[in-house]
Length: 304
Figure 1: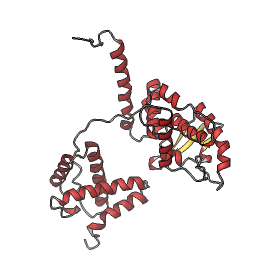
Figure 2: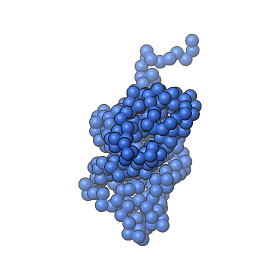
Figure 3: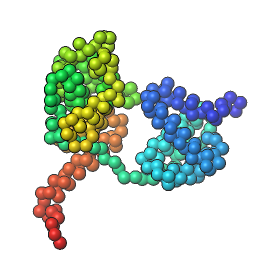
Figure 4: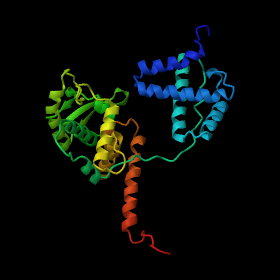
């Protein structure tokens, strides 16, 4: 094949494909590059001769070595997924005719349940201590994440024209450029209206983003994380407060009340319901705690 490019350029070509055709974020592309680089470095110890020569046996050896060096099953699952996608691209381009990662599975690891806040903790956290402009902004952000289940990336990219306060709804662009319409709860709606008055004073560059800093620039995901951590510490919330913890709390509380897994999946913007099903484990944990504390046959004896 005279037009076959050098193997050293295959990963870069793959990442360009993910960026242009699948429109993946720079953050996701970094994960793909890092995982493939990690695999290539491990394969070097096994006399790796290039992507074309990689076979299933050699890949299994590399995965076993990475696991032995402390890489978790979750991380290895992601690495293998990146490898399968990479070889699928190579097959599509006609540069190779095999996919050695198809039959290789990552070692199983314990499921890590997301951290949540209970309703009382949320109520305490979402009680603003004053009406200073920065407080109004921060509590509008927290209310909106908890009310609508936003990802922090969706929060910082939210624009004025994407909200309909009269209809108490908003549109967000999630992963894979998928658009979904979400409701805004009454406390979040009121907090937003208070913030939008202040926002006009800060918006000296006439920007469309909803959440701005005091200098009039859009907030970054990092600045949102820092502000939420500040309020969690200031208000004495148990455990660290971060955007995804509020999103997890939104999902867990909604599922506990509604038992409608499909609705929660739609609101969270999960493409696969198996991702949403982790919240059923949280709900079961809650039920088990109630059972252990309340059922007379479940109570453990205080002494043998």
